[in-house]
Image 1 (cartoon, one colour):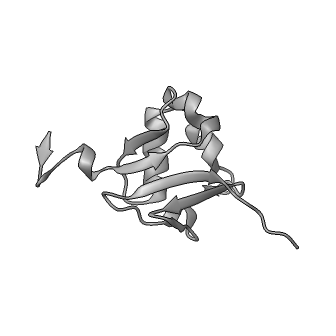
Image 2 (cartoon, helix red, strand yellow):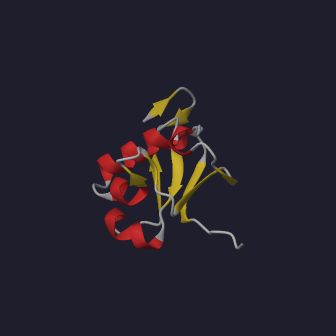
Image 3 (cartoon, one colour):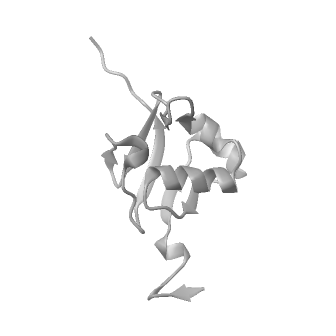
Length: 101
């Protein structure tokens, strides 16, 4: 499926799935998902793998759960669901690491 100089898969973000969520993806550690923001990536993950959004998001607050860190292209996101995701981005959802006192 060729469009505009690249295949459809080349224009999707690589999303790395945490081990505890991999049963929802059939054991896949990495999946390709379209979306230009973390919110769209999460929505598309939910369509493909029902139940994953509840593990990633606090739906009452409409935000990424505080115990989950989002890393886009090697940078920890400060914008959460609003963070921009490029066509060739890598997105990681990892357990957040809290600091000491």
